[in-house]
Length: 263
Image 1 (cartoon, rainbow, N blue to C red):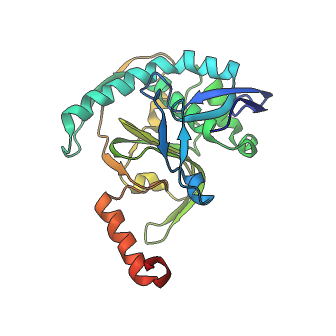
Image 2: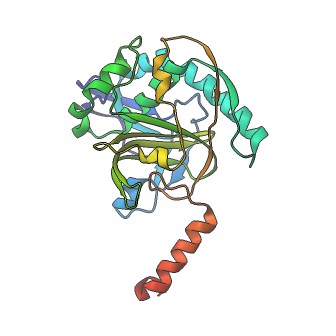
């Protein structure tokens, strides 16, 4: 990944020296080197990216990095630890409602700060409302055009993708802009902006919508029960939760239908 540089901070929008933002936070078990293919690698025909410090990038100024870490980081780590506790017990258990004792708004705002940190500089004006929502820690109620979903992610490769327009063909098809999808055990997160009257494609894949976490107050604790599904991530493309066998079968079909791929 790139070294320290100057640029426009994805949160405050100021031109500053940028610091490395761990996505998720370093203390949420994101301190080790990661080597995997991101969506950007795939688009640019690269084999993989190497994240030497853990997943993340140089996208936030020091002030915003420190503020969001102080406001939301601890709550996010506590949520992450509870997720790991459940993964150890669940394995392949069907979806059931599980209890959590967390600070919902803090957790949600950390997810959104991660999504913004992954975005391109050109998108900064587009996310004005969302940036304000994250930078005012006591502000409640997420801007209505955004949807945030979560899933358990015990298996597969990490996922680090942002800025993808996705259209689904079919009776319940729609169009979404995937602002970010981040997957690193125990959870994966997907932030979307549905287009027009379509519902989020993350919802149609059965992910759990956590947008309602924004109804809580800053630093408010809550006992809540959530039905979060298990999903696998074996490809870099957002909203792709096929199993290894499904991915392999799809690649076999492509080879059979393409003489060039079979050589």
